[in-house]
Length: 430
Image 1 (cartoon, helix red, strand yellow):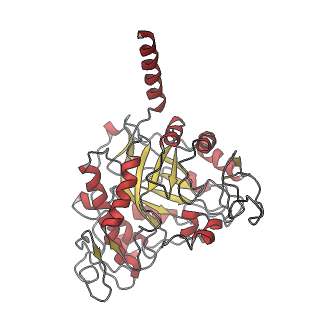
Image 2: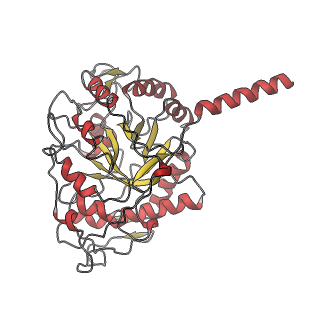
Image 3: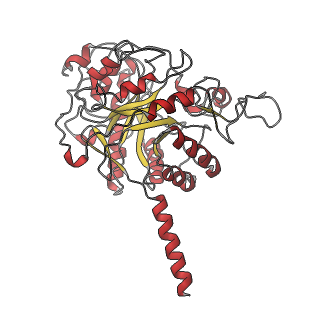
């Protein structure tokens, strides 16, 4: 009896040790592990299936092992099923030193710039995802939105994104969950980006600000440079940003093969004190040709038993050449140590809220955020759009960086280009 109990105790202790991984938190404008080391993101976008790629333990193991070989320490997943059992997959990724950034929205709860609203149905869905993934130490962050704003007129949705962050953070604190960071993933719209970036962090009340901001940027294409690509301007706009900022998608493929030269810039002396790394789009090879791995050759989608878009989505992952090896080589040479949390004293302050500019940024400075259940009424010139009381932020309000290349469509990133057409009738989305 004693022997059996002892053996069980040892096994449990061993399992705990295997699953143990430092948690990720924020101090100032940097990510840190609970061990006190600065954390730099080397991630890949991971959405094998539209609904949830974190339910197949066998597939997660195959992918996580190859991601570790690649040098990845994070994945981004756009859609998950909050009711599913993610323990095995999350444990597998933790064992391989890989963290998760996950979007809270579901297919029908995303904030819509054309008719912005924030209600209890949305909040309940976001909370359900948080309830599930707060259980795992390798959950590094939550996104409250992905590319919600893409036009100047769409800027009226920005307060709704901040309202979502406010309420999700309040729920996190009420439940006494770990302070898992809550942020937003922005489209790289040159005329909109500087104002949006500052607005998301501009409140003097930290409970109303994002914990981090990230950018889906496809500006660096082929044999570009820090200046030519526009990265130098991105750095100028972010140099005094007081919360962490990173690339939540990058990896332009208009020039092939991809050499991922932008990674050297992101982890360079020019950017490393401001930017916290990057997530490469994407893991799986699909029709958009952004994949780092494939699961076999494309087949006739009409054949019996074939995947809906013809691209296999499970099995042994095979590196796509030379993209996989090019990224692996880049990351292998980029090993910043950063600063120790104990030696770091934040000195940056929140930016000023950008002022109203017709057809560019139609939000009135530090406007009061929408309450839960509020819907924007475009027929009424509300306090959100009434101009004249905001203060524009110097450089960011007047400078805009160029966009270097066309990027994947929003639904492509979230569902996979091959599946988007099949699923469009089944899901109500952006």
